[in-house]
Image (tube, rainbow, N blue to C red; front, side, top):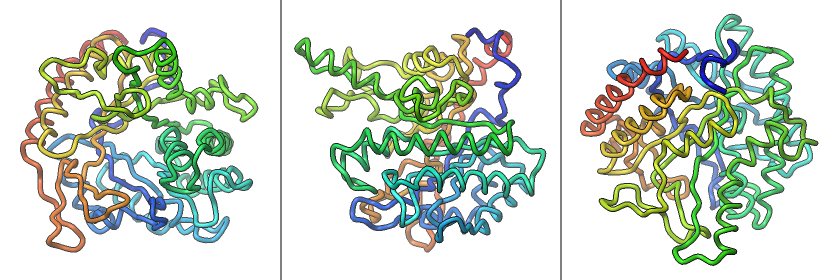
Length: 397
């Protein structure tokens, strides 16, 4: 679908190209302990200041999460008080909030394999939309029903890293999550036909080992294509009995990190910054364009970051890649720095990743904010690179 034929229903709803993602996971970690990153990182406590800090970087769109496990402590009973306070502050400052309804965490009595999982999630979706529309009837509402189904089905269904703590059940967990996802979208559309749905799935490249056998080449190609199973389900291309439909494809978000390209079987990650790159490593622009060609819908880079000292080099590379995608005429509508505030490891909370635009000052409780200045300078350069490419997009519409 060339840009000139994108219908009005696919108009870009975002206030800024660059977004901030506030880590909002509320999952059970590999030890069975509930983590809750919004207060742990200090975002709930510093909400006003965190939003104000975005101004110099012209970031007006953010990803936030409702924390399902905290909102629904008792089945079908919802406490929206924290979410309401976040919405109020966002509207006060003119910050556009894109809402994750399930960001890795479920209520204590649910897993994706529970027979009531989809029904409970669809009920949550209806309640959220009603709550939002009662307060903001005229706003554009953008929702991600469930974040990273592909990753969560592997972590909980194959790697025993979170609920339901299974091995060899990844497909069953994925089906359970996507059944809930699809029923949730249908429920929200019943109440608000104009709601915008943003998927957020990992964008990966899986390659065979060097001197691979014919079977390894085939297996790598299958594994690589399987990254799209969740979105294919949403579109009704796969497991159509779940009720997916092409109408449910709206804005397609893809999450891309430094370790998103690896050798079949997780044998090794393909490095992205080698002077002589591995011939199997693929530029992110090509991966984004491949995803766009598959679905013919506007795309967003919904998560990207790098830990440590390589943050500046990473974000400048991302700026160049985004610019190239835009110059190719692909409707790339945003790039989200995720996380914008540093975050700890899910399983080992004393280890912080140093991957945010602001590092955490761990001498205070909650953690303070320390701007990572080399990263900030590089972000401004990346923003200039993308801005220079955007007239190419504008002129083709």
